[in-house]
Length: 294
Image (spheres, helix red, strand yellow):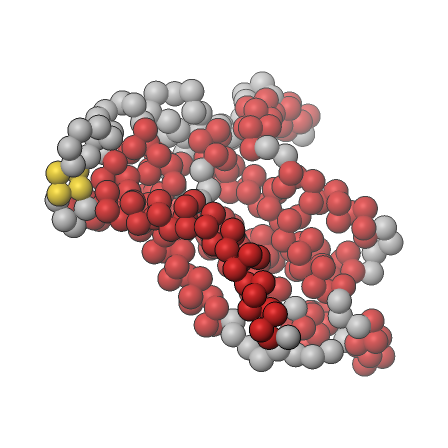
């Protein structure tokens, strides 16, 4: 049997490995090579060693973009998972939870362009939100789309669009827990927090760990929401207050307002890749537990 399985390894895994090599490994190696050069995208490359990384480390704009990326990773991530677990507790015993699960998952399927256009429609000075606030006597509402407020709006949009996605995954993990365990909790008088702490979390820890890894990878790559909410039509992209590392990398390489710096853009992308690798390894180590059988 093992010999037959080994025979199937190459035909089944081989095509996926080829695609992975062509689409990820080779571009990653090329980005590492380019990051050690000064290159405008055409003409000869000039080898500069680690100068691109040194310049990025001293670039205040990159540091600001890196901090914004960490805010999305940790602040938005914590809010998403707190709300997702709360919804999991509420929806587990709710009638019609299948329909509700589909409804809260739907925002994840909508293209970010829709949310960008919707935000401009409802948050502009004469938009729907301000009109509703006027009904309650608030005549001087915040400038929702102001440069200093737009990043908070981006964070709120990410919470709205991603919470349902992770709630659906967590609920799938909860659904596999035997109902008898929850019946025992009810007989013991356990409240919702105790059910979460002593039953749901231990038995869905592997699912939660997978969700944490998925969000780590996703948050570091966030680009289109920032680009659309920040006003991609403006020259040079969205306001720098909203930039993430992904936006910084794109503007550095394809901004069009100056000579492209593919070396620095590649260095920024490699730093993002290293951030993901380090955080994923740490998550896997911190969340490593013996599998519980039930």
